[in-house]
Length: 454
Ligand code: ADP
Image (tube, rainbow, N blue to C red; front, side, top):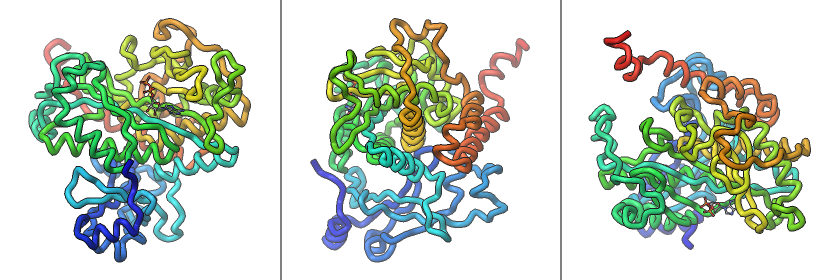
């Protein structure tokens, strides 16, 4: 399959005129691609070494506001520069944009050139290195669910987010005929991403009108997060180019099913899966059990990284396939963690808590930190749950609100030890700000409910 381009490949494509633009970008706290568009000649002559961006890009919200309370970036500190250092192993064509290639950058301190600890790529690399020190590599796959709409982003925004018809009229879960009607958008998504070097497995209709899922083959954790981020951006760009909106908002309407990003995880050593033990009734190794025990026990600590907005928590509803409990089960979609591929080489754990709005670097970093803690402490795995886990009163709840998840993040000794106090404080501030903004706003719902009758 096609892959990334070497720097020499890029140079020859610039020389032969087939590439004239290079996007140098990095994932921000929200998992968006931020950066600059270079004339390709400038990029291959000088900017491939480094470029710069304002340091507020790792301390802003979705609206590009400049909240106070961040130690790393502030008006007081003058909002100086970060270095964006292109990771030349990530150069790839962007086939859905004319004459364009892309490179992902690492974010470095302007003065010391050390990686900025709260940059999402650095956070994931740190946990990958900790796991490597124990002798293991993480293989991950993040599913991308989203909704396609009939109209464009602009039309929907101009309607005040009122005129929102999904691209299909009925639940299209696994539906071939309905998804055939959407091939005008979905086929280019699969093929362009494949041509950009992403190992696309499939797309399918999901369990709501207009809901889609993209699956990318599992890979080493950093690559998985890169793939997810590039794919999410591409889906929006390809849908936009055809006059449609694609949203990763987890719950765009209270009566519609939400969108998830389930994360499949397994550990490997020297290219061999080490979650496997043929002697175990479910084929799970002791290592896998310890890892899963950590994942489950610390789920409240890292829920913020799987559900970072107010809206994220609207998804956790009974009977919707979105979980509400931090327990595990064998191939049962009502629990927070599902054992997949039991008694096979592909045995793995799927975390079902994350919404489609998660930042894959942060989600994977936090889950690796929890799993590593489980391994280090040889944590025992509780027995699996069975049946309808939504109704299991004994099972622990996922934090139900952003406010609750902010508190469990702030108080997490595990994440503080694994990521550093500065990093946890930074993201706690991010979570607090989101809550503060919401608390300040009068919503349509409360006006309609109380205007006349209160
Ligand atoms: P389902 O359709 O039940 O959600 P799939 O069999 O399609 O599950 O697999 C879901 C995802 O799991 C795929 O993207 C696949 O690449 C990934 N996956 C398969 N094996 C592993 C593994 N050993 N480790 C991590 N992810 C894996």
